[in-house]
Length: 362
Image (cartoon, rainbow, N blue to C red; front, side, top):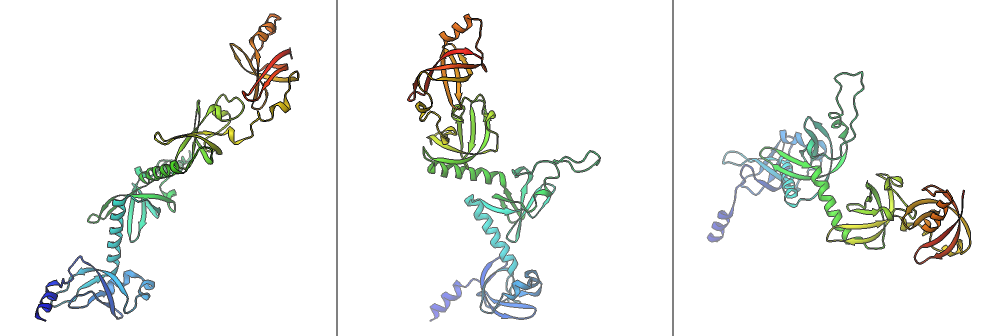
């Protein structure tokens, strides 16, 4: 028995200042709450601390309930330990913030207010800060009216317009001693896009139809954001008809359905097609064009071997260069944009070719 008592006394750790303890409410009085925290005495939550909780939270506290408490002052032989429920909650929030910093997890926050340097976001009982340099989703600048001298400039007025905005956030600094909790939207969105990219590269498959948004236009094609991965529609895959520049057909921000042509997972590349989501004009071409048939078309391109003539959207035929030279010998020069009267010489559906001969220039 003596050994048991001696061991029990040796293992006993009295609550000391700064501890977080799990306690059980044993008594509720008008000005204080007594909590058993495993010490020789009960710890007390004083009236000043209860006022911080608010009436609703105080009403939910009942005898026998287990609660986490922060030891604001450890017990002594003369005094009970002084406990804080709000500081325990804050300490838990600091622990959560440190866990998020370690894991790199992205969370969602709602902007509550702002200051000169950035935005403020609540995190439990803490206030996190997002420096202006870490904010990506700024609203467009609104220049002040010309008549109002000294009015805030567009560089300054975006901060108040962010209040109430939801955004993904990543913890980038936690310093409880200095009460610094720093978030970054920039890093959160970068990480989100990386995870989305990895997920999408596993899900996407050749032949799929995917929905996306045009993110950029270049002379050689259009980039489409598929939700974390940018795929490329080569200019030749935008439409069945000839396209000089993607901007002639598409615009940035436009939503489109595209077909996945090729995937290069190692390089993170996805080749897309817009035209293949639409009916192929070369299907059943022999039902619309037969040998000897008279047709009309407009010259779209001139080459060393002949002229390409558009017969309908997505269908071009070729007039051999010998036909063009014969026409030039008669003093009539064929140019891009010239409308021609033609006769069908041959139709090759498999090669998507139609051979044409001139009848006369209109």
